[in-house]
Structures are given as C-alpha cells and as structure tokens.
Image 1: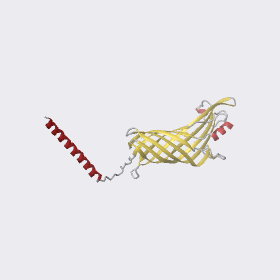
Image 2: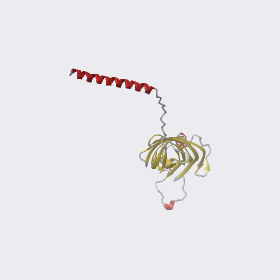
Image 3: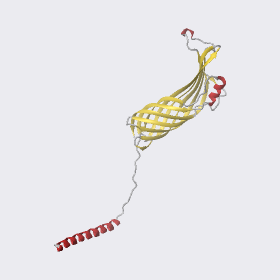
Image 4: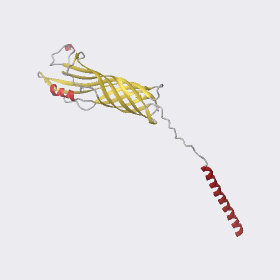
Length: 262
C-alpha cells in the first residue's frame, strides 16, 4: 500500500516539474517577441445644432456721466446703479462646410427707469428718466465638445445698437380733446440717442439636457465704435463725453429648443 502511495506521489511530482519547466520555456520564448505599442487615437466629438430660444442678458454699464448730469439738473431723481437686464431671442445653425462652426443672429433690449414726484408751478408732476439699450446682430462661433452633450464655444458678435436716455414729466392724465402742444411746465420730453456699431467677443458654455433642449451660460464684452448722438431724433449734441457709451461686460443665460447632436 505504501509502495503504491509513493508511486502516486512520484507521478505528481514529475508532472509538476514538467509543468514548471514548460512554463519557463514559454517565458523565454515570449522574451523573443516584440510588441509595438501605438497610442490610442481619441476622436473629437463632432458638433452640430439647429435651434432658437429665449435669452436674458445683464449689461454692467457705467452710469457716472449720466448720474453727474442728473445730480445737477434733476436733483429729485435717484442715481442709476446696478446691471441693466436685456431680454431677447437668438437663433443659430451649424454649418456643413466647416465642422463645428456655427452662425446665428440675435436681438435684445432692456430699460431702467427712475422716477420722482416734483412740483412745477405748484402742480404735482411725475418726473421720469429712462435709460435703455437695444442691440441686434450676427454671431459666429466655433464649438469644442470636451464630453458628450457639453460644448464650449468661443465666438464673436457684430451688429448695430442704440443707447437712449429719455426724460419727461407729465400729469396724471389727459383728455383726448386736450392733446395739443402744451406749456413746458405741463409736459416735457427730451430724447437722447446714441446709435453705434459693436463687436463683442464671447464665450459660451452650453449643455444639451436632451437632444431637443439646451441650457446656456455665457460672458462677453461689448465694444462700441462709430457712435453718433442725436437730440430728439434730429439735432446734434455737442460736448458729449466719450466715456458715456455702451461699452460693458455682459453675461447671459438662455434656454433653446431645436436639434442638438453632440
């Protein structure tokens, strides 16, 4: 019995030795092989979108020149401060001739108003000062998609805009039969408008919530040139300070419906 057990143990030992020798032999043959490693090519995610939607912008303008004039001639009016909210819409489409390139158009405008109750010849009137900006133009952007559904788009907008300041005071009501030229102490309107061209470098961050809905946040700087001020739409304005313009930082959010493939 013991002899048979010894034979079994011997057989197992021989098999194990042969297995080890075979493994070493294979390792030596593996050393003779060379493996050429190539870097994995990661393909960039293509971008294409066709959409339109609502945008809300915040224009951080400089009111110093306007507030200085108000303090001298409209002392009852509080100074302007804070951002001007711009409401608008934008549409865009990707192009087929240049991958990831996008073109579009937009329009937006907004107004801030300050009021005060004043006495003119013993009659109470409401004094208004409106500050408003409107812009429309074309956009050109290039999309980079770092991961699915998220795109970063540097771009530029060019177009035409208007900055307006309007002052007026009026009584609480008017009879239609009294709609006629009135003394200045009853009703008065002054309208200043600056028409300008603008170039606006922008950076968009866009996330496609679904293939049909996208949320955007962006930052831009509005740079104006070719400004021309007019008084009541016709007359030129002398001595207008160069620092009173629509140059400003703008931030924006938007929600778009369309087709988003990225």
